[in-house]
Length: 378
Ligand code: NAD
Image (cartoon, rainbow, N blue to C red; front, side, top):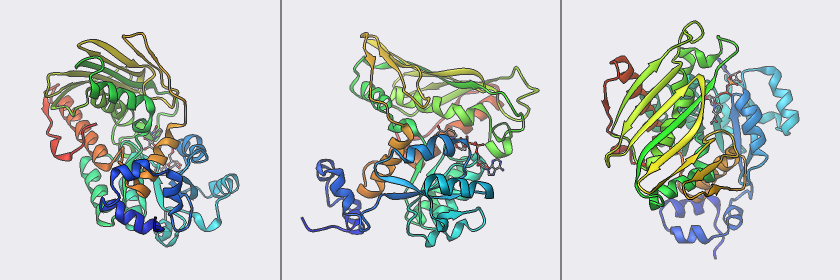
C-alpha cells in the first residue's frame, strides 16, 4: 500500500474512499503510524479543577491515541505543579489571556474545555478559531443558542467537536444499546432513570450559582438521566412534562434541587427520570415486553454494574471511561470513525433541558419536542 500521510489518510477517509470495511479491518497501529509525525494526538486541558486533576489527566496516561500535551489555567501556581508532574513543556502552558496563540502550537491537536458550564461556549469557540479540535465538557453549554454557536464555530473552522459524555464510550452503555436495538428482552415499554447526589459544602460553589452553572441538578446530573432515558429506549422523546421539588431553599437559593420528568416516545414507550442535588440516584432500569435489564450504578466512573431478567450479571473489563472517550474521539479525528458524542447530541440534550425548565414554569405542562432534524438518535 502506498504510504499515506495523516492529511492524505484523513482526506481519503473523509471522502469515504477508504470504505468502512477497510477502516474496520485496518490494524489501528498501522493507521496511526501513517500520522506524519508518528505521534499521538496532543490534548490541552482548559481548567485544572477537580475533573481535570483527578480524572482527565490520569486518564490521559491511560490512552492509546492521545496524551496530555498542554494546559490552560487561570491559576499561576498550578503551572509549575502540572509542568513537573506531567512533564509539560513550558511553551505548552497557557493562561486565559494568551490562550488564543495556541493556534501556533503544532503539538496541540485537541483542546478539552473543563470549565464551569457558562464558560464552555467562549472557550470552545476560541479553541475552534485557533484551528484545534474541541472536546466540550457536559452540559455542553447553558442554552441551545450557545450550543449552536459552538457547533457553527467548529464547522466554520473545520475542526471536530465532541461532548464529554464519557458513558457513550463505556462497554455497559454499548450493551444496553445492543439489547434495545436487537430487542433481546422484547420491546422497551418503560424506562426509569435516576441521577443525583447530596450536595454539601460551600453554598457559594459555582454549581449552585446559576450565572456560572446555567441551572442546578438538571444541568449537572440531569443530562445523565436524559441520556439514559434515550439510549434505554433507543429513541428521541416526542414530549416531556416536568416537576420541581425544593426542600432546602436556604441552601439551593439560586438553582434547582430536585426535578422529575416524564418522556413520551413515538412507539408508545414512556420514561421517568429523577435528578437531584439532594438525593442519591445512579440507576437505569428498562422494563420490556419479555423481561428487563438494569444498570446500577449506571453512570459513575465505574466499574458499572448490570443485571438482566435472565439472571445474567454483566461483566466487562474496567478501563477508565475518560480514556476510552478520548481515544474514541482521537479515532474519529484520525480514522473518521463515528463520533460517539457529537455537538448535535449535546445540543439535543440542551433542547430537552430547556423544555423541562419550561414545563416546570408552566406548572408541568407537556412540551412537544421536535428532535428529528438533528439526526441524532442515541
Ligand atoms: P471545579 O470547580 O473542580 O473546577 C473548575 C475549574 O474552572 C477550576 O480550575 C477553576 O479555577 C476554573 N474556573 C475558571 N473560572 C472560574 C469561575 N469563575 N468560577 C469557578 N471556577 C472557575 O469543577 P469540575 O468538577 O472540574 O467541573 C468542570 C466541568 O467539568 C463542568 O462543566 C462539569 O460539569 C464537568 N464535569 C464533568 C464530569 C463528567 O463525568 N463528564 C465530571 C465532573 C465535572
